[in-house]
Length: 151
Image (cartoon, rainbow, N blue to C red):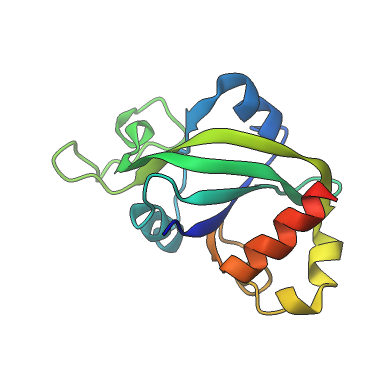
């Protein structure tokens, strides 16, 4: 059974529309150990809520799915990259990424204020671990958010 996740991106950097144009893309540049570990546990076919962060408004914008399980993030090896990691070697990588495939854009963005105001979502990691760019989502949370996005 596929797991459910929420992954954040600033839409002016990489949006759901950008993913739709590319069809699939590596989710690189994550530099938080907990978020990295979540990505390392992802499986091909896992479903992802694509979330626009630092936007007006921020919110769930659509659905993607993991189309390639975790592998070393190549940006960590590039000294010219903002995500360069001097401790990393190809034999001992520090950071990982997954590839996401576009599934759909919601007819309407589900804004953060609406998510916060939904009692059934009160325990969502999005509110408790707001700095994380990759978080797990329960099947019930997934069902509520995707239904609202399609409404």
